[in-house]
Image (cartoon, rainbow, N blue to C red; front, top):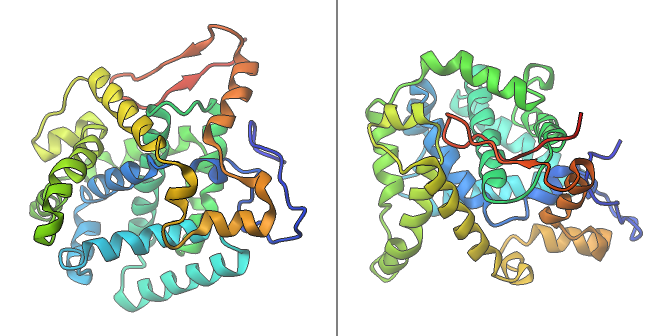
Length: 311
């Protein structure tokens, strides 16, 4: 069954739609540039699990190869989202092999990394103005069980809805802390080392992205890190404004950057499969009727933007 609000698949070219396909919420959302902010938020959140972040510190060279690590992660997510089934399964097999070799294949830690990532993507996407119904948000979380399988998790043990995801974070909250490793990640994300020629870009662009990612974290994360954030309404305004600015960059220009997963998928499946997150707005508007949208940012600093259905 096609997820609520997703667009009709266009596979007239006879290509492989991959693990998700154009009818999925994942396909529509993962092409939006605000996902980069969501990815940085995920790093901040993941660092709050002392055991998980210790594994990163021991087994990763992120401080020496931060950009390479970021691009490898983006390539992995892009392959899973828009690549062929064979390419996605092969990428998953490589990641599972690396996890085994490094001894970081503990299911509990993999689950934490997965949930922090999916929560961050969904949170930032909704808070930056892309309208998703609750059903569409649940569909997205459920779809990401496929991604969880590829990194070595049992999909049945992974949250499949926003309610299950929220329950997971409530249960794991007592285990989280901002030790020295987390503070090292925080300092690195705020001011990563770059060549002299890129320092102006770091000050103008990266610091804004990192600040937005941090500010969009839940209040308990701010308390653990020991740094406050602006009021939720201010964060939401800044996040939406920045996201809209990023969206002014033509899709075709952004998507031409390596590894070009989206353009390759469109060549494979047809131009009608072009990702368009705001196409989901139509379904929400029809379901809710005029004046029914409700912006719910709650006490957690902006859990989501929700469009409630009647009844």
